[in-house]
Image (cartoon, rainbow, N blue to C red):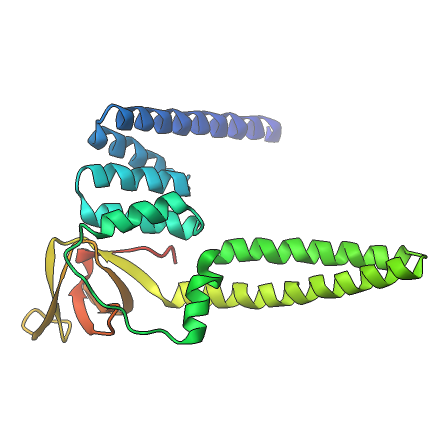
Length: 252
């Protein structure tokens, strides 16, 4: 009975994978034919299977961009970058998509450490940093074994030094991974989907309007009360926005 269930599970997974592949190919064909709405429908079906990838989000973003849908295009380019921060095609297209957004918010100046984090450490996601940790854990252990069994003094010194360097990089990478994970978890980002929305100084409709945001603007979500989200924008301004007028980027 267990064997039959196991075989059924394998067959089900194979069928699902084939269906997903078929949907993805079909969506790509629709995109090539200029049928962007149909392409989006099929890409969204793949997304609903939780088989997401940077390529899927990139193609979704491109489809929305072709339809001049500012919010969704920026949203999915940002989602693609979260899975693969080194994807230059996504970065370039995101620049073009942001030019369609109406809000031009000047960012607060960063400290040296913040610039280093943004320009270098965040080039990899915390999952990719975790791979670096595993790689150097394996490499350091292997080099230490070579050191232990080596008989030639020069080789022992070489393996010892390189294993120490590997373990040092391992510890550093582990620290960076932990910090990047906490940063991603605590900095909950979202994209404004409403064409235009008023941000208020309190989570009520009769509170004072403090500034206006438009579709495609990225915000940081700080708090939530009922159907309101407290947000911060790039220039440091704070306010409350109706929750369904933004869409969260983070997967926490």
